[in-house]
Length: 210
Ligand SMILES: [Zn+2]
Ligand SMILES: [Zn+2]
Image (cartoon, rainbow, N blue to C red):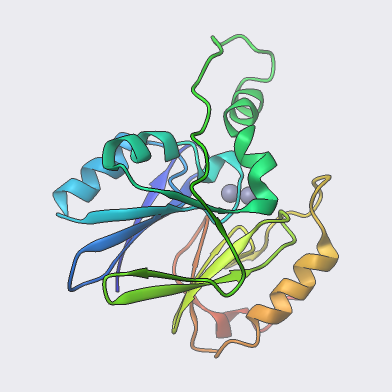
């Protein structure tokens, strides 16, 4: 597997292009914004995108989903429990970036989700694959994607901490259970988070309280 990390949007989200080396088939993980930048990178690297996978429904992970779906005619994958967040992503973005509503409204809505992700589902692309691990907590439908030794964690786990759980639909109890699940993976697991420094080893997090 080959991984290209692009920092996109106001929140500096890590969008990952994960490719099967033999075929160039590529999954786009968390296209948070800047769809033209992501598309250009895909074309320049001669990659063949086959799907858009969202680690969760927050707007900073999915604002470019429509543009990429239209550009490449590929399906979008999300856990069903985050559909309510995905559906209001553009509205949330307008609110957080412009709380007084001065800017013109009317950004497009996200397109429908094509496939809902399930815990332990395998996503295959070329001869590569990623396994879905449902990790609720930060949001009810947060997922991680695993292919030893690589783990994409979205906003569940960062180099310096964990995703926020102060939102009405978050659950710190669920997050703790999810982290316990992740900490059963080998210590040489290489983590690619949704923000900040990437990648880092699971073993670097020994001191993290969870
Ligand atoms: Zn988030
Ligand atoms: Zn985020």
